Length: 104
Image (spheres, rainbow, N blue to C red):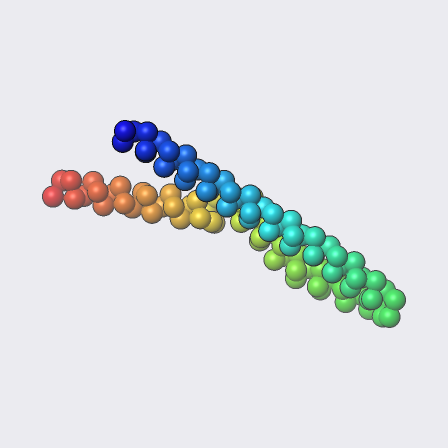
């Protein structure tokens, strides 16, 4: 009975983790969509009213950096950033502590 409950628990945890990841991806696409829509409006305003100075570039760059960081976190471009890395390190430290206590 314990093995079945543990299996169900593991399955539920994997489901919750996958669900959270899907929500993060969905959040990124909402962020991307709003970035594109706002940039189109800003480019239009800039080119219509002040075409001699292209100031929209600064908004494009600044928000683009934020969007890139969001994508890096969601799609795990850098493995040392994010919850998975944190969880892995926590488990690693817990195992290390368990080993120390085992020999004491």
